[in-house]
Image (tube, rainbow, N blue to C red; front, side):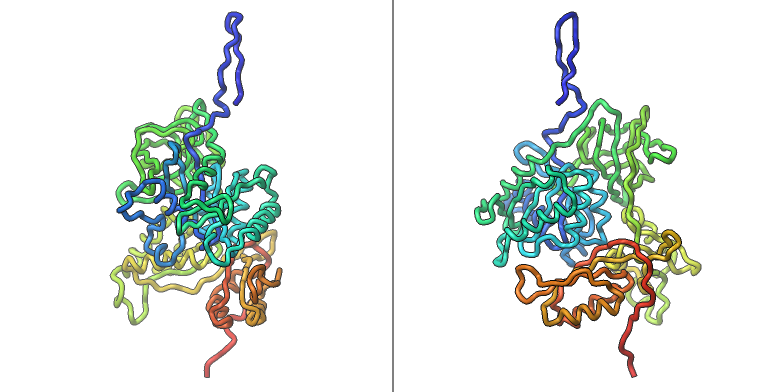
Length: 507
């Protein structure tokens, strides 16, 4: 900490400056990983062991959404908070799929440390690289959690070496490279600092989290709260979630809000919530460092700064990622319409799609020339599939058009989105996989044996997103269901021309 020396009638008095004040009672931590490496299971175990639930009480999972439980994936970033040794740990569980990568990008603004969860067999995968890159760019310090250490094929030394190489590739600073490693099994709720010396609880992990940097705050500066996420409630309307960077916020306070390049608006804070276990708790006041949820601002958006009305100083806005895939959704005009759902009219479908924009910020909805058809754009096929399935469960009947990619003109050249595709497949089927990806205009980047897996080959291709539509079932058929595929958006590149969608006809 910095000290100011003041002379007062010949006497020296020392007062501490508030510039580098830290909230030692608080840690804001995000959990990031590739899909299926066990983030949510680990968070559930941490909450269970924090004493938030009685032994005879069923602990609620962070994956509370029906589709999340059925698919076994995390779709929405969620907040939880646990108390450990008198200190509050705000945990943010993030999705592992690239289609929901936008959730990860925004969350990095709210945290001072991350838990990078890596599978003890698979090691770092494409999405691990993506989420870690976002964290390192912001100068955030990481704890590497080698999860699923109880698996018989676990190879912790190989995984740690691969993670270290990944940090080096991503230009991590010397301080970031000196990361702590914790070995854990989220399902069994055990952890340790050595792979084969585990305690029967997660205490070593909690202890390491408390060593992460505390939130830096300045109480003397005016209020600044950057909105990083939006939730929606039928009764409360739009609710903004974010971290108070400076100052403090009170119930009923009149504030200004907006972004740097736009005129500021005024509003009044109706309610303030902080996170408590996996629920939320209403409070009258919150201070710098806290992650809060606020109500009372009807048109709040991601990237807005909530500021002091007297001295409004906006923070740089968060860039919301651009969609890459689009589909049309409209009224069901088939002969079988009205058999399954009850919500059929175009007006009802339109209202539902535009309402989705309130909380699904990576989505775009446009009206088309046809009055009963709407164009919906998202980050990938899974992103749009989740929306369609939610609507079907709510009783909608829809006519869905085929997915197509969103093209751009960059420097006068027509470009389309490309993805990096990572396929692990038994050696016998590797040639079939390469053949299919080549026919879809893919460009091979790497091919070699899978380290630590006998008889497996890893194939990496740079593929146009257009060529990836409908390819999964074809690859599963060609490999008898044995391939494992991971994809992640890479960049926009010049279009590759026509891609043959069908090889076989019918007589």
